[in-house]
Length: 453
Ligand SMILES: NC(=O)c1ccc[n+]([C@@H]2O[C@H](COP(=O)([O-])OP(=O)(O)OC[C@H]3O[C@@H](n4cnc5c(N)ncnc54)[C@H](O)[C@@H]3O)[C@@H](O)[C@H]2O)c1
Image 1 (cartoon, protein in one colour):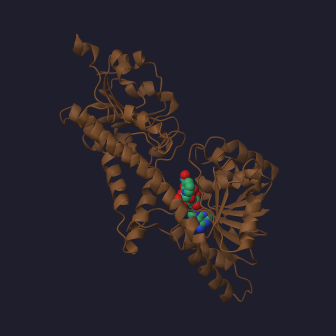
Image 2 (cartoon, rainbow, N blue to C red):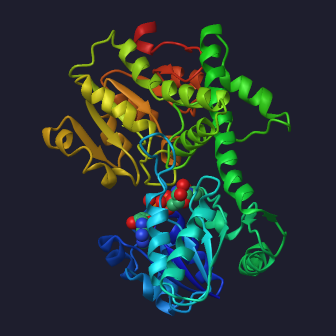
Image 3 (spheres, rainbow, N blue to C red):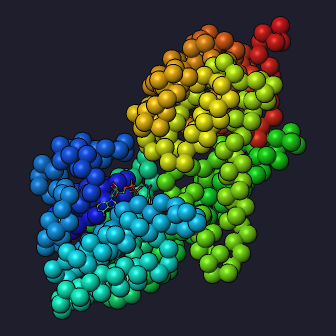
């Protein structure tokens, strides 16, 4: 099929490349000229494993191309995907500015019928609004055709987005007519050869399904974080509890890890948007409010622990920070817990030596002043970060931080203490190696060798 994907971000780029991989002819439209220039040269402006080789191959074969001109993207397109951002608006709701702007551009530019598909995460009723907006303008231009808008929410996970798109757990198709559903089923058939995991439903149900999925996953995380808070007061290790409850298949092992809070481009904004949607309906979203409140508290926990450890005095302390991206496998810093910690440490006068395998370049603009003054140092090496440090804080559980050379880490640090924001280390082992250990919802185990002696 001939496809147009509007928006070359995490979702748009993966969608465009994976559809091209299946033999479709895809034109991706992006309005950001510097992003466009990189893409035209085969450079992917985001970090997403497996994406760049696929994109390069299809740019070379001509299956995939990029443009800044919508009319070019729409030429002969049978299906048009909207994959632009829906950030949090001023009142907490999803800001539909980008989506509605695309609708207006489509209304002004389309010259032939096609199926419009919302891939962006949007509140219930948005497809209808988008359709009305486009069709009003088509009518005003004297065109005789109208378009239909379907909802096809995206469930890919940053860090494994290509894999998730190529082998989806499920494909949700929200269509209010059979023709649209048929067309999308045909488009997705090559991704679902072994198992038909297409879930057909109405447009509004599809729009809601995406929010409910993210809100449920965020709820699991906040629930475990709340249990962790209680565990630490009762002298119970949340890791024992996690294993204890995860073995129950009704609960499952995923998304029950206690930690320093969820971030990213989806959970925080989608929970907030759902809360706002409920408020607008006069419905009290008690659980969602608690999920958000717990997460906000959780993001401050590491700073509180570090500050407490130093009796409230952080001026001049050197803190090593391992991991900046909101989760491993991505360079995405949106709403990352690391930023809450970093801002608090800098405000308290600490010097921070942070490292991340891929997210450092994305930090430079935001922290230009601290970098300039030397209060913040960034690098890729975990060993550089711990040089002369008074404390080490693990924020993002990248693989390279799981089994570091602890002897080397301890030798490099001024004071051997580890704050483990993701509970990836064994407290007993860490204590045996001569560190003080502080996890999330775990009783302290042992003291540093120097103290014991
Ligand atoms: N990132 C994820 O993991 C993920 C997963 C599932 C769903 N989603 C949803 O998908 C949507 C997109 O998310 P994202 O993370 O890819 O966003 P993003 O911010 O990374 O990318 C959006 C892109 O759209 C471009 N854009 C905006 N308006 C445009 C226009 N009028 N014409 C052309 N390009 C335009 C922007 O320049 C940007 O490059 C959001 O609704 C998000 O909630 C995201």
